[in-house]
Length: 319
Ligand code: FES
Image (tube, helix red, strand yellow):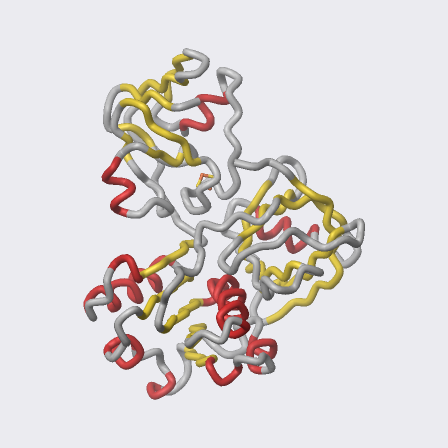
């Protein structure tokens, strides 16, 4: 896990749709930004120790700026509200280097990108990458209303506008997303990518599974999860230092480890981004995240320390 950061400058900010801040970040020293692959995110260091991940929505081929879309959610834990306040034009901030837990698979015969609300952001980067590579794809953007959706002008003016399909909850039935039509006749080797609110994703994934799309061809990224992270107390042993600590019922492993001086790098603190991933050497995790696949969870050899707990009395971690 890299903690390397660089100084960035807010070159442009624009409020779009309903409560979405679209910002372009450039490197403060004027140099090219680090390369990234579609689906990547960066951490924004928003002050007072607040670090939050946001997906990159710009073309990976553009190294002069990173474009982000940030939905202000007053009900969240403060990251998006701070970002809306802090990211004024001309402001500087530290950002992490791009990391990608949601990459495009190689070898797809066709790609279906589905973004719900602000979940459109990684899909835009993917659409740019697929378009520039001349690959077959379609992009579906679902939102409550047209007025609520950011990035519409950009998508409609893009080189891949013909592959963009919009679906609004308050629109007519004929424009609603019909996954049966989109995926029902999907060619072998079609891959699906979905990002958006949990209920929306569950619907898309459930439909895709019902239509027989293999699990390995369904790719998902949650950007928000309301997880219950409390549970029975257990012990954690940090193998490298040999220290043992009690994780109380209302405490996270990250918090318990901090109490004995072991600092774990975190970002989303919701089991979404994978930053706090750690190897489990002994014991059985109680997985509460949405980052690991079901197969990875069943292996029980990795854990997200910000939200997951233990089924066993003790977990021995590679720390
Ligand atoms: S900090 Fe994001 S998964 Fe733990």
